[in-house]
Length: 95
Image (cartoon, rainbow, N blue to C red):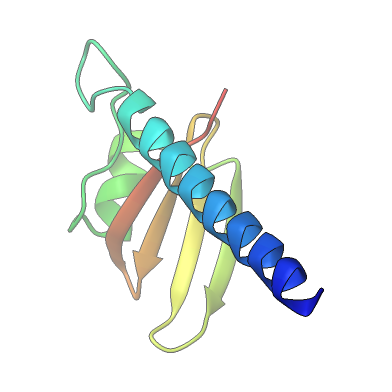
């Protein structure tokens, strides 16, 4: 009885991991290009001042947390992540 329960649990865990990987890959592949034919957004390595000058004021900001400090600027179509004053990633919001 215990062996059957353990086998069922392991099968469920394995399937869940595979589904999560597929969803993540789909989200990455579906992101529009960072160009005029897609969605222009900040680039990794830009400073906060450069992002502000190029894209304007964000609709919302989240203060820095952690060490190193990570902060977020939220725009209508994407969120910009900063480490200190430098862009480390930009994530396009799913529609």
